[in-house]
Image 1 (tube, rainbow, N blue to C red):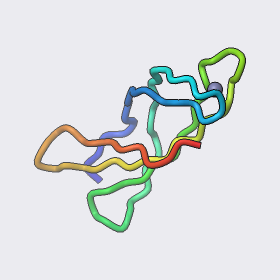
Image 2 (image 1 turned 180 degrees about the vertical axis):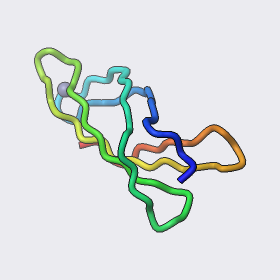
Image 3 (image 1 turned 90 degrees about the horizontal axis):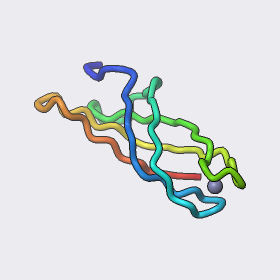
Image 4 (image 1 turned 90 degrees about the vertical axis):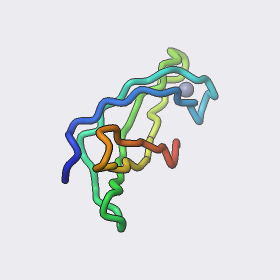
Length: 80
Ligand SMILES: [Zn+2]
């Protein structure tokens, strides 16, 4: 593995419960290697920033390790 852990990523996430979108910063510490050598899956949880909601948002995604490039691309595949 050439990826540096943890990965700090920030992006807009829309809460599936209250539908509010906020900017979140999250830390990815555990990665699981996918079928493809350069792809890793992660699972992380966020608490909705809406004080009336506080829903536990489950984020699933992929990190693609571009060894030729120092920038890794991160893709969110599911928000529940
Ligand atoms: Zn919410």
